[in-house]
Image (tube, rainbow, N blue to C red; front, side, top):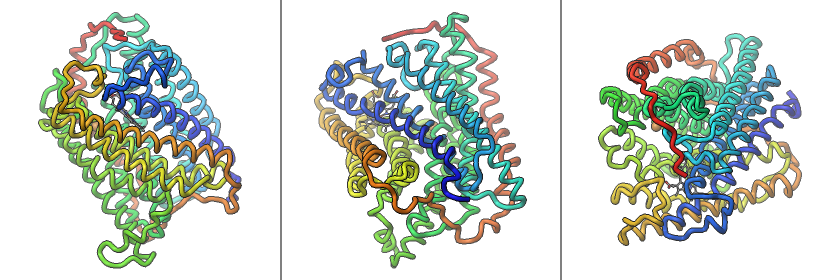
Length: 548
Ligand code: HEM
Ligand SMILES: [Cu+2]
């Protein structure tokens, strides 16, 4: 198919990514304000004049970064990857356009109460904190829009399968669609929470709500959402990065097996966010701990397969010896280095994750700054830096212009690492050693001790450097879209070949039904009894609180 055949699809992708980046820019604005607040420097009045409180800012930081940026970027990216990988246009483009419009309208509806300080409930919006109803309605529309776009991708894949009977789905499309399927199942919890509990309650149709039931439904979605963020990065690490490194996918069957295991194991583990919640029997928490450990298995497969694929690249480029191939990788390509460094970061993020998921050990770090250190390694670096790396070829592709400055992009990537290491290390230590709470205006806390200061200052320095890297990223993006030279040769999506033909991959690794059934069975087993118990004993007695 000729290049410009995907005109509509690419336009749609560009719109998603444009909105995503706008959200990232506004959302990260509050990052340095937060770390500086913690050392007693309050810049909110000067740099965020309309913002009424630290908590309004923190809500914007969480919602715009963790919910809006991620969802828009991912849906846009997966649309691009699916159609290009299948070489098949969207089957029903109106579905994807409709989904996008729903997401965009939802974003506007969410933004209004957020900006008016009527929804400063943080991005987890735990009841009994109560937001203006439009906050919940807007978020619901964003999620429903993403489902509709997911269906648009399924019809496209279904069409491809009709035209290519018996062939293995190309890996990139396979991983992309699987990510959407996982998200659709996972987000049912959030949908139930918002539609059944929160919207009627914030409209005043019911007087009270049940915080424990609401939190449980929230975390049904809240853990797998991290895999909704990670899997698109994995699509790139498995399916594209080996090509960028001059290598091949070490094992197509292993790659698919890992994705299936993520589908099956991402969801039945959400109670690991509720170890400290009363009213859920320890048996279920322990079961979710064990299932969380099981998710480390596909993560280890990923580490093995992706590193082996990159090693093939390093050796093909002349690397020798046990580690000599590492230096031969294309580190000067910022798209590669961003994603490779994102992977290295994930080693530490993953280890921290196992600690958090351990029922008893978590109690030591729960709700402390340790957690902030953890998710700025995993979400804010592994995922975001991977997306940044992807955008270093995708934005040139979509805009038809060269990357504005490769050298600046190289600096941007390393500056991110130079910022996040002290930021994250100090947050981990502050949580572990001093049990310093997260979601707290530490600069104003009367219990602040001089002993904590050095680490808080280190966190602030790291945070400001991290933000400088974000700014540099936006300079590069804007420079690329508005000021760079037109591309001489068109950019192609990097598609890595597998060492052995995917047609050698067993058919059961390309069959949806068995995996979906196993996935549903595990959900019913792990969530059925505790949820049934919570619903049977539901107590709609908590009135809404507006603490701001
Ligand atoms: C620009 C650099 C950034 C800095 C300096 C920064 C700093 C911080 C700090 C200090 C907190 C903790 C606030 C508290 O607990 O009171 C925080 C929370 C958070 N950050 Fe960042 N951040 C940055 C970028 C990001 C990015 C890129 C993401 C994700 C895409 C992100 C996602 C989050 C989330 C989800 C929270 C939790 C909000 C909550 O507790 O409700 N941050 N950030
Ligand atoms: Cu989790």
